[in-house]
Image (tube, rainbow, N blue to C red; front, side):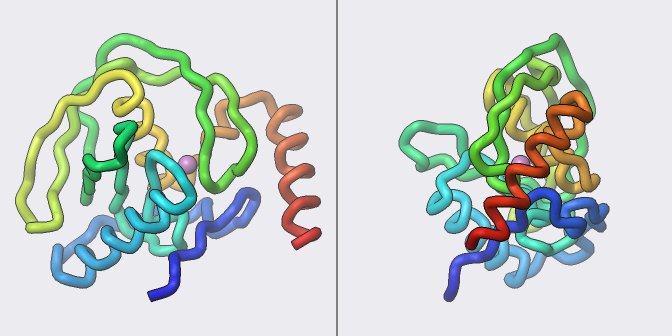
Length: 166
Ligand code: NI
């Protein structure tokens, strides 16, 4: 199986709003596995289905150093947030750029796993930031949207130039 291709800003497909997954079946589990593979190879700490041009509410994350703790969240909802945390964020769809973004420091999420079972989890720090970043992708939102329009345009120009040179 070929690696999934990751869309890059300013690809308009990244602006698509994802739809909830209706049936958590083998196809969804396969997609999650392929997304994890693409994420680890990139390498990155999170990937949303939107980024591989599949517009379903599915994200994968693994913020551990050993890359041995994959988390798959299907139809995730944030039901509680606490605190505030600013970190330098990057994105596999915005390669090479890292800019400070403000997020909640702690979140509680409800989601479904690949076995189709609902669960609730709490996350804080980098994991919380990563999940919020990936969930934004499902709404067609990118971390560059939090930056000044000057900065966003600068990133857009540089990436378009890089994409042309390929
Ligand atoms: Ni991203």
